[in-house]
Length: 304
Image: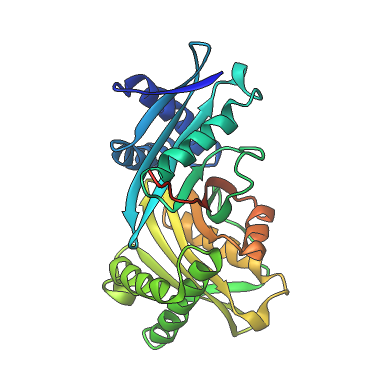
């Protein structure tokens, strides 16, 4: 019978958790330093987690970690870890652990439970809505062909219009993913852009690009170099709607990889919001692997 015992000492679990996460990050294309930075951020969050040992007949078979926090005026639960050791998988322990975690979070007032996956989970979280994915690809050498697409820096005259459209697209992505409603998403957009690029076009470390083909503007890009050690993060690589379906999507990705490589970074990383199946398909076909996938499930709050 599957049982759960909260642990006072997290040291053994932390070592096991770090090992598993590090392996997942490096397998997805991150270098050792970038993987370690992500682990540092995760450890900072994990300090508040409740970690339970999963046992079967007194034998430890895995771990599950949970926490409930306040976010956007609501209580949100999170499954920070759910792992069953290989010899004990497929015996129902995973589903029992997920149900225990959901009940634990609901009992503390959570109306939603989030989970961040770094490895395929089979059908365990099929009922959870995909909120977004973090994707990455190694760029060991710059692409030699951009299918006729050229890249140039954005001009000060082009920046205000780009900023307005980019903020609107960000709001749309958040709403489509189901993460927030329109008003909350608009406030988040204002906050995030003010924090990320406080100096606008001249914000250090950021590259604002215009993509052109045959002398015509076909899209834009926004990259941040050194987001993690050796990693350029792509906030957006956008092909204008009337130019879509012409093969420019892959060329835009290649342009981003070329710029990242020129800046000295060996990996290009993007976030794609849930519900954007076209972008997910593009990233998959371009060889971008899932580093993390965020999912969530609305749960009934416990009366306890």
